[in-house]
Figure 1 (cartoon, one colour):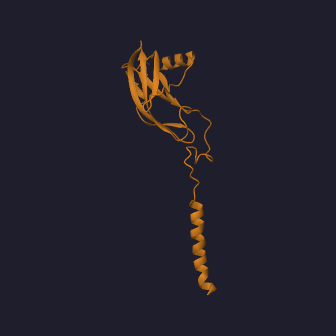
Figure 2 (cartoon, rainbow, N blue to C red; figure 1 turned 135 degrees about the vertical axis):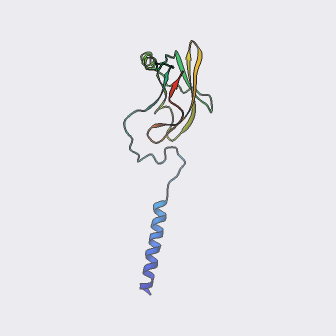
Figure 3 (cartoon, one colour; figure 1 turned 30 degrees about the vertical axis):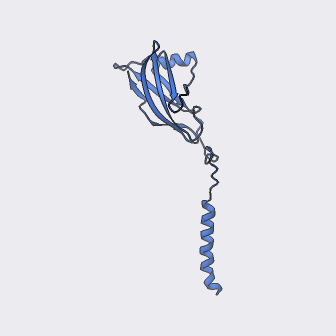
Length: 144
């Protein structure tokens, strides 16, 4: 009789072990699953590059990044020297690793201005994981 119970006990043990191993403490926290994640030390920024028809860098007087859902201004603030470098290269920050909370997704609109006139407008979807921001959709190389 004990010999016939042995396979049953082994199967029962395997079922219980599988159930316990698959248990997950899901507390609906946006950080859940990130506590054991190893991230690189780099700080990522998504860059929008704007060129004219002749492939020259476009110098914007200003730019805005707007959260489409609620209208919040999410523009990455630049110092005057950083803005000057962006203007020289035609490369403007869309968002960076500190723009969104962990495990978020947002639709944003990039708007560029020259002489207080909107000259370029493009829509993007961005997301974050446990470590970095990522581009989900949208064209980063724009031609004016």
